[in-house]
Length: 280
Image 1 (cartoon, rainbow, N blue to C red):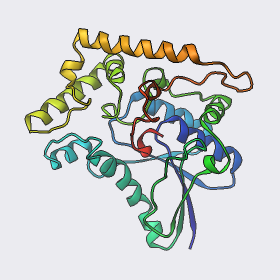
Image 2 (image 1 turned 30 degrees about the horizontal axis):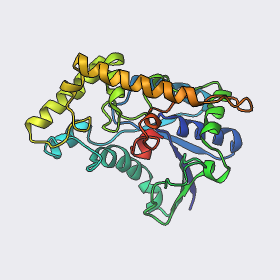
Image 3 (image 1 turned 60 degrees about the vertical axis):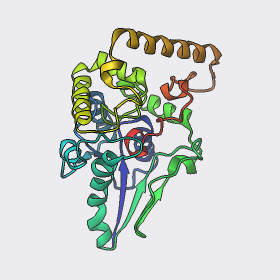
Image 4 (image 1 turned 45 degrees about the vertical axis):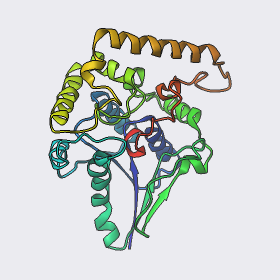
C-alpha cells in the first residue's frame, strides 16, 4: 500500500496559492498537481497555469473528460447547465478526478487531496470523500490563512493574480452561469468569440425548450443591447466606487488593499454560488 498526494488547481487564486504554499512548506511531499480541463476555459487560465507550473518546477496534469461539453449538452437534451442542474461540474470536473484516483483507491492506497478552503471560510466544506481511503485536507484553514494571506502568497511568489481578475471574479468556463451580468459584458469586450459561442449555445437550448438562459432571467441577446449594457456597467461602477470609498489600506499587509471581488459588490458570497472545484 502506498500514498498519493494530489492538489487540484482550478485556475483561481486560492488553489494556486495553496500549490505555492505546499511547494514551499512541504517540498518533501511528492504532490501531484492536476487541472480538470473542460476545454472551455479562458485563455488567461491556461497562461496562468503555465506560469504556475514554472514556479512549482513540476508538471500540472491535465485531466480531460472522456466526453466533451457538446456531448453532455446533447445528452441532457440541449438544456443548459444551471444552479439547479450542475451537470457540467459533475461530468466535466468531478468525474474525471474520481476516475483519475480510482485505480489507487481500488488498490488500497491512501489518497490525500489538498483543498484550498481558507480560514475565513467557515461556511464552506470541501469535497465529501466517498471512499474511506480518500482523505480531504485543508491546510489554509488549519494554519489560519485567509483571503489576504492568499494574496500575499501570490504576490511574494512573483505570480500575482491571473490576468482575468482584472475584469472577472472567477475561473472556470467562459460561459459559467454564475457570472454576474457585468462579467458577461466584459466577456463580450474581452473575448467576443467566446461570447458568441455562448449565445449560440443559448439559442440552440431555447429552441430545444430549455427553461434556462446563461444569465438569470435574461438571454444574452437582450443583455448585449447597448442600452442594457450601459445600464449594467453604470450600476457596476456605482457599486465599485461606493466600495472603494469605504476601504482603508492596511499598511501591515503586503497587499495594503484587497482587490475588489465582483460578487461582493452584489452582496453575494465569493464565487456567487459557483462550485469550489471551478472557481477556487
